[in-house]
Length: 361
Ligand code: 5AD
Ligand code: SF4
Image 1 (cartoon, rainbow, N blue to C red):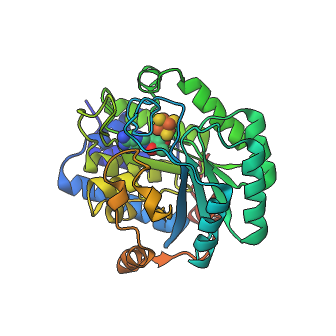
Image 2 (tube, rainbow, N blue to C red):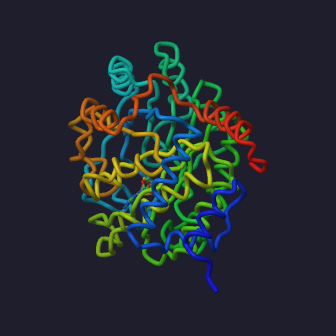
């Protein structure tokens, strides 16, 4: 007999690595009361281990050029309809100045896989940003050589986002032609080794993805012991081969966010832009079921609409005042710190010692 929802949830709360079949049982839940129980349990776990604060990360999408051809993404190289742009280091610096003035403590520099920026150019920029502002720098530039990562780390970059996208190696290879899950995971491990705080994550509702694979996504992030986990719905993007596929489900994504919180209590988990794009309550709902980070888009407004990974993200209401009001309206506090995963891990350890939970990592 299959484990019941209640038994699966209790087992998942024991602090040990969750069982794959229990995660599947919890992902299968569609009864509103059961889903609410899962969401409030994840919310309580977030409160206990990483607290009430919500960290804001300003994201600067500085180039939409990409040499990859992922079937799901509007930045893929075969999309000739997209107007491509690159910000100069001076433009990026200006966006960072504005971010610092606006009170951000972390900025995320994101681009497609664009070889136009050398490691030296980026290192010089990072060095200058760190010298001028008290900002944590997160990079999201895709797969690079070991030496490239090293150069950026030495220049002072703190964190790196590189989602594993899906734990299914065949699906990965099909959706990302010419690349492999193995190589992606090597990048994640290398970045961790170099001392970056590393964010991974996956998409929910990719064509051909099963609930069992979603459970494996969560277990993989735990196994990799990652610091940040971005879980968002797949959104079909025009001018891509998957334009007619169906969109990832809001509630399935929220269940995956909640389970990620239960499986990785120390993690920084964003209420993703993709969730906010498929439903205007999406980000608030994610903050209510485990998320503790929000990533407002601070790309210059005239460029923003060209960073078309998927449609609709550019019209998201990302004004800081609105997002602060959203956070405060939920009884949460806008963080004034950098919100590093190291702090979370320390809080987590202190808390579990207090609670006498025996098994952790
Ligand atoms: N829908 C949702 N997320 C997407 N990404 C790329 N394309 C899509 C899409 N169509 C996500 C991937 C990638 C990040 C930059 O954006 O997870 O890592
Ligand atoms: Fe490029 Fe990333 Fe989009 Fe793939 S998902 S096409 S690597 S920007």
